[in-house]
Image (cartoon, one colour):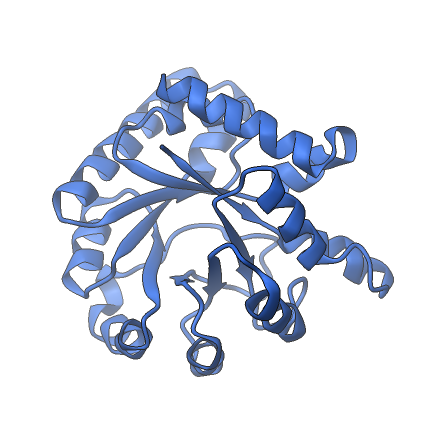
Length: 244
C-alpha cells in the first residue's frame, strides 16, 4: 500500500502569523493519525519560519506515528537530529529567500560532504532520505553515499500540470517514472512529494516503485474547506484509486 506522510509545516505558518499558540501542529498531527496518515513530516528550517524546536520536541515526546524530520545539511541541524533521533531524516536544500523548497539536492556535486554528514545520522538509527530531482546522476550518487531513501521532487511536474503544458508535463512525468525505476533498481526506497494536489496526485501515485508520498501545503489549505481529516481522507482515496 502506498503510504501517505502528512507535512504539518503550514499549520505552524498560520500559528506564527499571529503569534498565538493555535493552531497547534501537534493537534494537527494527531488528527492526521486518526484520519489514516502513515507518518508526519516537519521541516525545521534554519530561520524557524514555521516549525520550531519546541514543536519537534513535543512531536517526539507525544507522537505515535513515525516522524520524518526535514532539514538542511548544517551542523546545527545534525546536532538537533542526533539529540532527538527521529524515525527518518530527509536532507533538503534550503535558501533563506525562497518561499518553499525550489528543487532537489545536488548530491553529485558534494558526494563526499554529504556522505560524511549522513553517516552519524545513519549510525544513530535514523533512516536517511535525500530530496532530489529525477536526474540519473543524482540518484546514483544518493545510492553511492549510503542513503536509504530518495524523495523525488514533484514540484516541476505539478507546476506544468497547472499551466496545462501537456507535452512538457507528460515528459516530466515520464522522467519521474524512469527516476523511480532507477532508484528502486539500486536498492533505494523511493518516495515523492512537493506541490501535489487532488488533481495531480493520481499519475504520480500510479508509479509502481513509489512507497510513500509526502504532502503538506495543499492538505492544510484544503482543510479550510473540508477539515483536515476530510482532506486527508480524500487524498488517500485518490492515491488508492490510482494504484487500482
